[in-house]
View 1: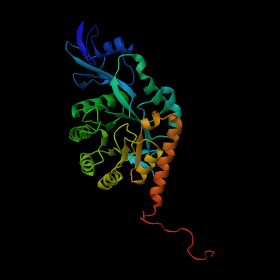
View 2: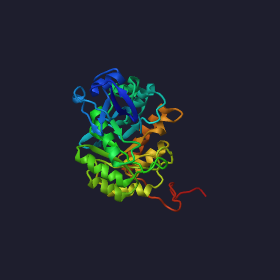
View 3: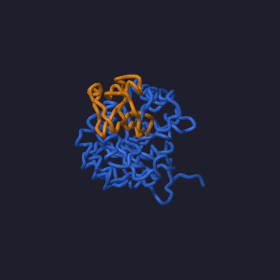
Amino acid sequence: MTTIRLNGEVVAVTAVTVADLLALRLDHRRPSGVAVAVNAQVVPRDDWSRHALVDGDVVELVTAVQGG
Amino acid sequence: MSLEIGGQTLPSRLFLGTGGLPRVSLVDPLLAAAEPALVTVSMRRTSSPAEGGLLATLQRAGIRLLPNTAGCLSAGEAVLTAELAREALGTDWVKLEVIGDETSLLPDVVELLDAAEQLVRRGFTVLPYTNDDPVVARRLVDAGCAAVMPLGSPIGSGLGVLNPHAIEAVRAAVDVPVVLDAGVGTASDAALAMELGCDAVLVATAVTRAEDPVTMARAMRLAVEAGLLARGAGRIPRRASARASSPTTGRVR
């Protein structure tokens, strides 16, 4: 298990990579319309399947919602 | 005469914000009624696959998206949010908002200028939400912003253009498009903004929270068009006293 802070909440996850995390949370390893930052750096989509998560990572997972 | 921002020609002078949208099923009728050049969206944390409904609908409609950095309180937050939006949506355009506090929602112009400089360096087309201040507008253009978006009045207030002279001063101060942002409450506010010299108007809750959003969307489209035409037509000067329009001679006595 890896303990990360995901969207502000400390969680323990089985995910090894960003793509694993997306599969856990969004049911898809390459969901469209979302972006991921790890430790305040955007992880490009093409790197999701090889970017490893480590204990203490701060992960932001965002999508577009309504807003002016 | 079409509007060009950042080298792109836009098909209309109305920008539609999706904030306050009561249901996603309104998207298609609103787009049909408003015929906007683009729509704005916000970037927010997500944790379930169902939250992409609005985005999927907008992408199906093929409308240009302008992600905003709404709610950001620092340049750092805004830059990261813009980077996330670029990655998620595949657009370099960003409506840059950096607010000073969550009560007034007024721009923090120090952080705004810092964020604008950083984002321009990173290749973004930056459209900053700013005060109705010509000096700040000029600084933002010097930083490389592709447009400036002064507020007419506080976000969501519906108070319209509270200081028309300031909007005219912003228009005169910069040579990039000026988009009236924030405060529009009804169609006449949008028409006034165009008459004052704005190149486009952004409306969000004036439409989405109207009793009949689709009819208000159409009213906004017509108001922007009417304001632009009126500006081009050259209004009569204001006078302090009356001036007869009927002939003053040949009256029946």
